[in-house]
Length: 302
View: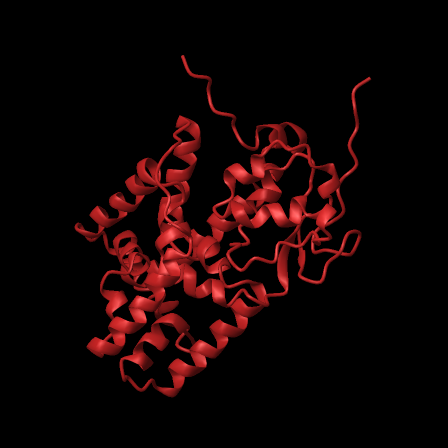
């Protein structure tokens, strides 16, 4: 009988307690379900706090928010946007340029609820050895969506965008949309770890470009305390971004995770029993101030 898979974060729960070992995960779920609720209040209860969808929305009939990826496809397709759409894009670009473009993937996108569940179940079942495409594939798909928009004169990707379809399915219960959701879930569970979001999704690829110079970063501020438990690698949807910051001291590499693929999900912070990681900024160095409190004092049993 095969050994049961190591449960990432188990030691962190013992050391910090369940709440602190899941702090950022809980906050992300509050954000994601809060956004779903904001969009759903109108169709469900005729309370229209937010009108529209994640491509374009109007909050309280005042605040416009426009997905820059969708707007660029429209521009490539020859559509001239209205002024209010441009204002909405400016607000979104400014926000994600500060907090990290791929924060959209972990804090907003409803598909993340599906892929996170598949990833959690993969770890529970100890599933391994599945196929992996290059993570650059998503950028090729991103380019293809712009090319198709230019050829067809329409926003082609929105016809099949799982983000839009999942939001509609969760709010309106569209039957066929659930087949796509099930397909993504099974793909991530059985075929490829973090397959859709980590290798194929052009939305995540686009938002990663907004993270190139983002000041908000995860910092391995106490990397010397790392005991190589690998929990952070096991839960990270983009594990390739961790190693340079965590293991690069001998090569003169700083402790900041600077890769634009990082989703700022905070799970590496949650599951680390040694408090190696913290949220900070791209200019952080060892011992510099970060956004979180210093590591708590610990006691040992005699």
